[in-house]
Image (cartoon, rainbow, N blue to C red):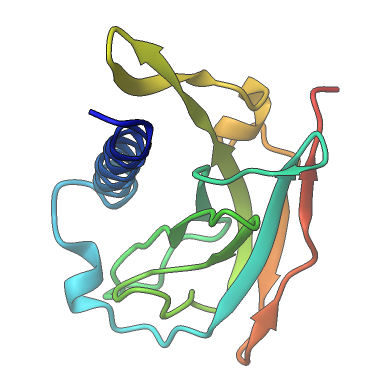
Length: 159
């Protein structure tokens, strides 16, 4: 195998690992049911950016946790996104990039940078401080309006 195919194979493993991580995290965020399938609340486009120590947090997983419970009959949702290589993200509630319901949210971020284990890349430990990974302790918040929402960047540091 030459250097080019080795590099391509590594990127392929990383893409697969990112997809698997996103699916696992999305399942956890939505619970066991298909929460987005019967969503009755309108959603609005939401884009943003996440950096950690000044660098784009490519591959980080962002979840928006509603601060108010859903109205009776509404399906609870936790909009989510995977951060792109440039640090940007577009939230998904039901279909890819559809956005989030209007309201106030606690925002969590987890970033498991890949590490080598033998010949494979596997998720490493979360490099973002633990406080950012839990809705009860995260300092990150967002308010989603009933329109397009371009959020201020979330600039995370170790301190």
